[in-house]
Image (cartoon, rainbow, N blue to C red; front, side, top):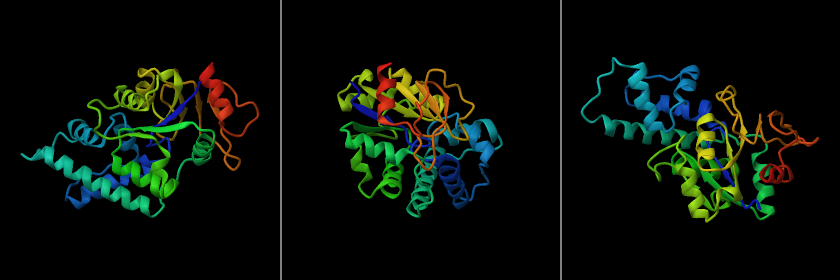
Length: 252
């Protein structure tokens, strides 16, 4: 039987990438006196690399070969990432990054039905805590039994490590859970851990390969913002992905 739902964060629970992490990175770069700037299109390309520190290194290797790395470059990357997190959490505190449509509804339905909730993400624990506190509920972090985030595993998505970490702490097998993702790398990670996966696309991931997903939608949906199925079984007249449909997907 379905026992738990495991959620990615960035792009899945909220549209954090374009309007959250990207401007927070730019503020950190400007604050450090660097001439780096990630516009919307460039950031979409950089999202092929998971992890903020890894993304900065990739940017310099592929887009800024002119940059001369200082002797303390690794420390600089760590400082920049910490500054980005500070700017990002400040943005969250203003309520600038709401949850995606249908997320709050599904989380509340799952809790009421006794399903266990968990998070599997490459973003930092501080980012997760801030998003849940300011966009979900003051006690939002307590809604999730396990939060796998940041550098708790050595290999980030698309490696399955973070999902294996969460499954181990839940004490559940992959066939007792469903994962929720928004990107091809995320789907590779969850499927690599043996999890059936629901995908909700966003502007950055709409053209990714989601052939291995159980269902692909534009959002989870609610009466005010109905969901549209992009691939997979129909919602049978419902406006949203509800627990009944999730159980059918899990059992299929």
